[in-house]
Length: 271
Image (cartoon, rainbow, N blue to C red; front, side, top):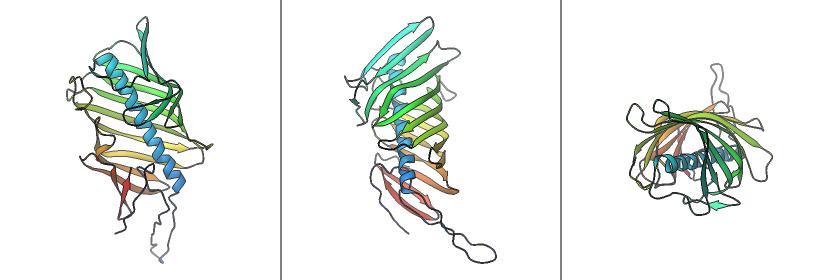
């Protein structure tokens, strides 16, 4: 069994070329399909940018509308609320630069807009204003359907997204569309971010301006703890360039290790 170790920034996907072999019924043939190092690096960065920006939005909304005694955000972040009629505008402003507790460096603004709660649900629109996440420009937006209580009795956010992510020193951009459902299963109402746990499901597609495409679907619920920088468990199936693989985030430990299963082989990825 082959084992490969990857450096940080190459999360979620293989970051060098792999060979895929197949046999025809008439004669044995060898088909080579390349997993591009650069394309996979950028795909991993898009996933990290999306999860990071969505985490910022969820935490800001919860703090302002659902209450937290201790804020997640450092003094360099300014959060303000205004209201016109029944519409509320929530602005998260990081100015020219702000380092978050999880180590992410962000600039610019994220804007949320929403009306009143109707039948246990609130619709939240979000957009970006000159926003960057770890030097990646982010544009676009989407809609969050926020349930105060789902069928299991937990708060839940369902996100429909269309965002475009740029890359430092590159003309390539990536547009990601998808659906993400986050169920807040532990720490609701505790007043602290240290004991919070979210269960995440969904699927998405990412299209790059250079022609590369990739899709992913959660097949075993992802688990995110807010006292850990990484997903601690769950499995994602991925498809790209006609090939299939799966990513396993472990069994609950807070670590930077993800296991990739591809073509009968197992690879260790360090986030």
